Length: 536
Ligand code: NOJ
Image (cartoon, rainbow, N blue to C red; front, side, top):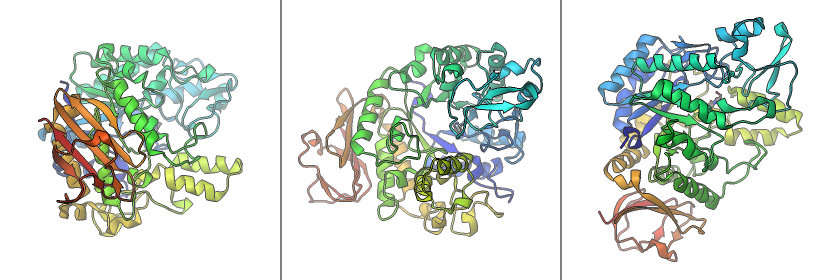
């Protein structure tokens, strides 16, 4: 079995992880300080979001040089040191590959925008006029006027992130070159930013096409064939039908994909992420069920609740006040019991929560642009702020709360984004002193995944599918069964009526409450979760 099927990945957003030089921004030196913390958690792979040279219009997802490290984050020597330290501990490092677009400060774009006759002009997408009324993900038209050439260029994200023209073979060759350069350095793979979009058809506002697959197969042949590395595609447009196409081994495209359907259930469909609706547990269950089944023996899933673009999961669908610890553990168990490679986003392992800052304290370009756009569209400030509290990406980007000292021990300087005021209560130091911590629970989940192959290989069946208070399923491989049952409410729930839960004889491997002897076994306490093994 491929090593990455048994691995657990930990995502680091370096700006907010740990600052080692007092400038208020996290850096590679800070990550090096914390390698043993990550080892203790038990993760196998670190995914580092972009640390390349960048003007930081989108916090590094706007790259101006793929071969250099942004001095804000440190030096190439430090990156090499980090890689070595991880490898010494039998851990791996994957980097972010952002090649749907570059920064407008990349040399290619500078040449492209200055001169129509430059060979770099065709590295980007140009039209004489805006040929569609498509809106960019960060508000405003995807077409931006360029005075020097009297044309419009295409950008799906900020106007400082021009999209590369993937139909140009030279562009693709440049990308393969940089991928190979990094792989030759010894890194263990890539997370690929919005990689399904490389096959878009801008003239038709079509976001993915057969070309997404053609280019990925070409990339595989040029970069990954014969190397023991792994690749995960951020594929926001993937569906249960297309996810196997990206991730089936024999298609030689990607090792696995990130599908987002489960994280789109708390928005009004078609209105974008800021128009909120309550997530229905039964919808969530159905989405997971569909993806688990669609990819079983046909492709490979990534399992994730959080990343640097998503709000904190315990605030989003758990309970971040009275039952913060219980619900954080429950959500972790639900995810880690499924088939796929689990991802832990920094801070999730201590149950970090969303924030409610005054508007001026938000830093994210997506939020800032959105406020302007929604105000113009007549939204009340109250509705806008509700959207921000629930969905702003800065919820996930507040600095990691290491201890209860000033700025949560993240920096000696002034943090680039404010620390969540709850850091005195929620921090790593305190968590590590508790025996029943969320951190310890993640450690156990990781151990169980290593020990029970059924989690990696077994099939998936949803149980009590109609009961909106419960999320339960069974994983099966031969006679071996692994059950996960969780109460998604803050009330006691009696599961006695659910006939498919007649398994309670099995060994309880893990739960988020002390087992209560003598009590009715099917009575679940608020956000209680349990994992049972039967037939081992
Ligand atoms: C997805 C990344 O995760 C996000 O942070 C970024 O803004 C966009 N892609 C554009 O690169």
